[in-house]
Length: 201
Image (cartoon, rainbow, N blue to C red; front, side):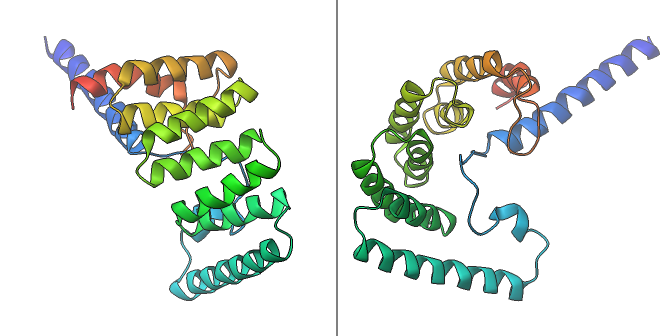
């Protein structure tokens, strides 16, 4: 009996750990299909305030330069995309969406830009538009992992469609069985534990 109770306790512990990992994952971690100009949030962790301030200043200078560049050459899709990325990195979703839209008006169909625009729509409180963007990117590139992953996040967290989210992530696992969340957690484990997480909400 003691062994049975111990086994139950151990199993409960594993489930609790899995659910705790899943909670962190499901709080809205989302992929960007690009390399952040600033080195991203990972680089900022563990930095002191002066370093972060310097990095922020560099980003603001980059934005000013890019804003000037698009006024001088408004037909450069790449420069508009870079400006969108800079707005992305400084958490200015509305401006990022506008810049990405201008980039796509010049050269339509760039799935990376469309995916990043979807992330910005989500951050701007427009989850339906985010899904539209991810779906558009997936029509162009059906195997685009970032778009599939992000679509699942928005379906689950923003629209409350857990079954659709699960279906989307299973599609991703068919493409890449070793797919991982941005925090390194295997997507397969998170998918397996999603029903338990939903029951414990």
